Length: 629
Image (cartoon, rainbow, N blue to C red; front, side):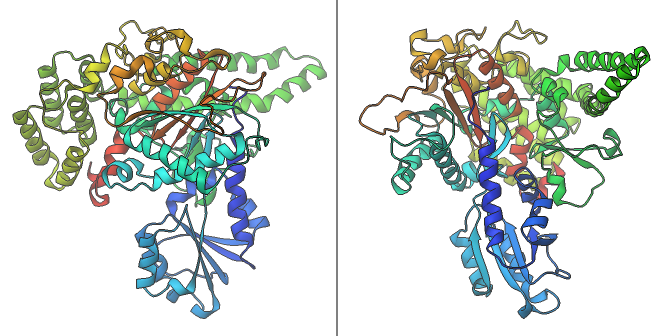
């Protein structure tokens, strides 16, 4: 991935945009921030920079109540949501010492909506607030992973029909094209994927790129993009991820690349400061500390994409090596040898801290994975994916309900059962609904209705399910998985190859490679060497057709020729893999594995957010009932 387009460009664009907006406001400023934006902002800028160079002297959370001792300029920073507009409208008249002593500014991420403008107008404060838009854009979580970090994006896109994430992704992709040149070829699956592609054509007319003869702003060759609608593959996020990073997200939770950890797992004494900004900079110190999970931690970089079954042996090997390294101090006899050891001591201490952190996180995960409940759910999941003994799986799910297992665990399995088998028999469906409402409460009726509306929990039809039709042709179930030394992407779920990544694997096969190579289980058929023309959907057309949403291939032309510009001789071409509705860490691990087996092509993952089954279900619940699930 050495020749991937430089992702730090997007961090610079977002940081510069925020700083420019703040600099336009003359004088000291109080920044009032909605809590959900702390994490994304922490990934693109630092509090110290805003305070030292851009006039921010005080910071508060955006919440009901008065601000105390605010500066003359009060700058609100939030998403365009009615609840924030109401809080802002309620604050100006209560700011001390006097309302007329303050100037009010509103920075909306990423843009203002008609509904929010109307809300401020109805509340009588629109004329007294200077409203500006702040395009936060794509945030680099890793060199190969860019995210809009949208909250509840699945609900907004597919349940509420709010297409703002599609528009914002379109604007972000236009930024990529201005920086790296036109993306000639786009292939996709899903209605939202098609909506995004059509939008790109429109935006190119409204915001034309540089002329074909001009030089891109940055180095990198992006010759294609695969756009996947989350609805096209809902089996994968409903499954329990079995990679280390995936299980950290499932069990503990990862938000904006940060995980909440016990402070005892980190050094009590502050280590040497790094240049990586942290979302925790924006908040007071909580009971748990937010810790950035990134490839700057070499141990995490080694662990993150591994199947959890091998994590223990890696931690043990690392502990033995560190112990040996510490013991070498006894072998240092001369002053020069002692100086050399002291010079290495800081690195050893950082590694030791990392080992303590990941050992602690692993112990938390093992406390869950060792339970009967987890293993029962995992067994049901594996049997459902393989299509084995479905009536027995129904009984296992009933047992979990009787044991009052978490509602999200039960619903993930029921939705998985429904999607894989093409729905539940009407009698079985009604029985499960009744048992769920009686066990967990009737306030979950809206959630069940939402699942039905999204076709995640439906009554069966005579037709075979799209997943069952794709299972054999794409070899989605692999029996001979070597978790220690995997040869196929199916290791991320211990035998299930994510449907979404199998489609990418088929698409990036060179056209000369022959049909079906993309679905080979050994992974050797994937990848387009030397910038070869990609196969696209040719090898999987029959499998794609029944999956939800439109299937398409599209060209963005700088001239009449439908062929992409050849990459520079020394550059490996890049394919963007864009997920609308979220991507799981297991899919990211599978795509990285696929990328390693594709030396002639780079994969750059672009997404609206990182998700997993429980977070998707939570996003569908009314906020008042989320804690009870």
